[in-house]
Image 1: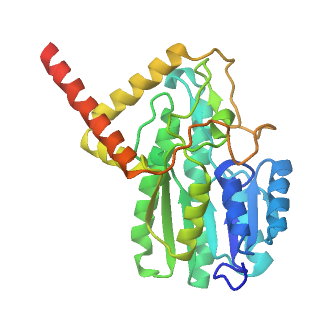
Image 2 (image 1 turned 180 degrees about the horizontal axis):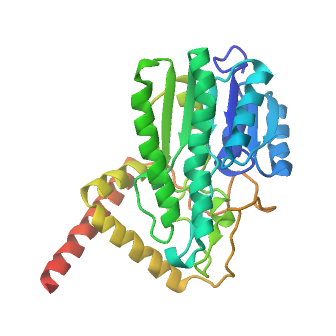
Length: 326
């Protein structure tokens, strides 16, 4: 698209080799941007770069493990040296781990925290110095509903996402005197990406995202929107906002409810061998934008209201039964 505000803008995207990161790169490519694509899987990353070039973008590829601060600093330096400035930085790279907390190796918990929490902090630390020198810049963080909704059997994931939310809320307060530097947090509901297939899995069972799952194109389009018109918080998927409010109203119930739902699912799920997935290193499968998880609904206020009412009714019924037993 000619004469678009994003034409020629330098945009860095971490975790661009698959899933929401790859889809975000493809969306930005439509506007003839200059994309710096970061990830651990160079084969998949180069595939993304080629698709973006075909769409009209210039691309630079940089192998980066966001858990390694030196690599993230090198990424920021390469992007700055390439075009002289960085307009948008998208923190997106993340990993998942499932299993009973004390059955998952502690070093795996630590690596999830290093990627999901410290990785986002590394990105912010590296690019903010450039933004301040320029006097402008937009930092976009793909956090997920996991930033405020606990995930039993994914405790280290919850720790990382709750931490990311708190970190960026504090950072926004620090940047109040920098009116042209923006921090934009995205909270998508569960996405139909390969991430769940790449996850470390110590449950011994096949795991799937909780329905409904949403097309990652919604995250990609949200990134473009906030790059054009920065917004502190964006909820993606009709379940994202209701889940937040239900957790605020009845947090203990949500922890109980989600734990019970996951246990019931695992009781019936098919057996699978334990795996550390892509937590410690990249994998060589499922590097597309989508994860073939199905059940991608169209946004609907009616469905959102129904989900909220259903969960609240479940809460009150559970509470009433508990009081009756006592």
